Length: 335
Image (cartoon, rainbow, N blue to C red):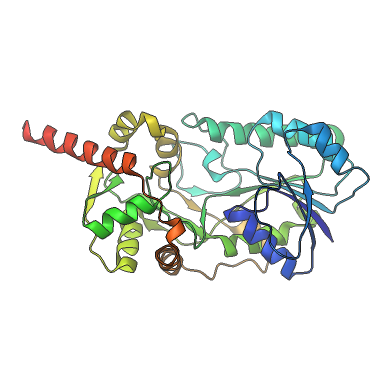
């Protein structure tokens, strides 16, 4: 079985490529040739945004699956339909669980939950992508499958509620230094984390699966923790106490315009949701999650501590945290 992976070097796609190779798939990566590729894969170097170049690079090729990890807009999807219609038996689009209805009317999310998120353009764009794929399927039989990850991470990515442009290390550093760590709201919102290797089991099980055509699936763990618990687990792995500091989400959004926290908070992390994985388990019976949230967080912390290149300081975010905390403390003094 032959698959073309568009991207293939990110957190999710790397895990998918690794498992697909293990299961005997013939994998070709389409990217710009700027990343180190895993062993055992073929490579086609082209920029997916250059439609003519991609068509020329893939001329005469056929695939059982094309998996698209870096499409974000309806225009991206319309381009892909032009390129891959007739070239593949299945086109898998990475959508997002953040596209589900916000504010939530029922914390239990199924694939039938409406894709209505007025708070985050990213999520609305993903929903528009799915609508374009369904329209192409109804009109011409374009064989798509949509996959909606939630918060998927790996050993290279510690999951935190808020971070700046340089990733999560500065939050880790604040815990190490005993500084207060901002957690949105009162920290009791439930959140689901999924380790990338577990996500890959569901995704690879959908590859080449005829029952998945014209269907959407979220792939997550069945476990949830509050944001307080998640940050406590990070601190525990560091061997440090957590100095949690709670700030209302609307205050964080108003103060953090340079980080665009409004969409990720109101359109995603500030909402308690749990995911019903019945559909993916029915279609891919072998799907299960084996890395608990506690173990995954510990793995991520240990890996980052052992890899200096991942310890990227973010002084701007550190200063922003201090300013937000000072502003809230000053407000308290007025009463």
